Image (tube, rainbow, N blue to C red; front, side, top):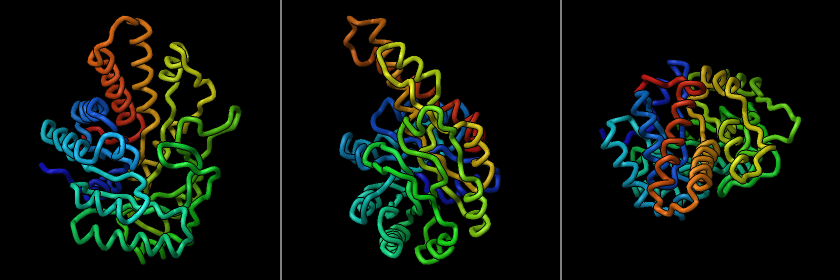
Length: 309
């Protein structure tokens, strides 16, 4: 099948009480590891590309790699723009083969966010592409996103925002954070399920998205530290909290930092144990395997979408 939009994915996820993993991709090995996990567990996938990834790997290369992933697996795969900063970037992705885009106007005043999001929605829908908007801002640093403090989503804005913009899904801020260092040592991670519940009440059967939802899996942090890293203070979102969110209105959970940790841990371990090796295939193969292992874990433990392709 060709690449799909997120519309049916989210309708099925909402009805089934699970979420779809939206995994950030930057190169071939990351894509291969993700889709191998999806194929093994028969899970639908969203492969998402940030502005930084497009600059790093080139838009056309990434589109063709994702198309190859679909062709070799037959899985339902959506290609999504993560944190589109402006109309021009979203339009370029829509025209260039993406089936879903996010326009992130959350840093603008509310009315500007509405206007910008509607402009993207109008263009995307004319091309059969779905759109994710955002209300509220997550703290943290990841790729091109750098926000110093949380700005929780205000539930009393969501009906107006969705109604006026026509977005297909909505990213909200309930306490997740971008990057691996989400909380200070000793600080207890906590998600605002009260905000999620109120948003769900106001937007019945509407797909909600969580950004910054990596859990910083201790196994990979320990491996990075063992082979020359300094990740001891990294604290992520407890996976049981994410699974609870996936059982409710959350239909898309973004995962990036955990993939980076898995890949980096595998490469550092391989190079530490094999310092004379210089063939990239030798250290990228275990990195790809680590990505697959991580994604399998997320599908089974957090998302609940195994067997839902």
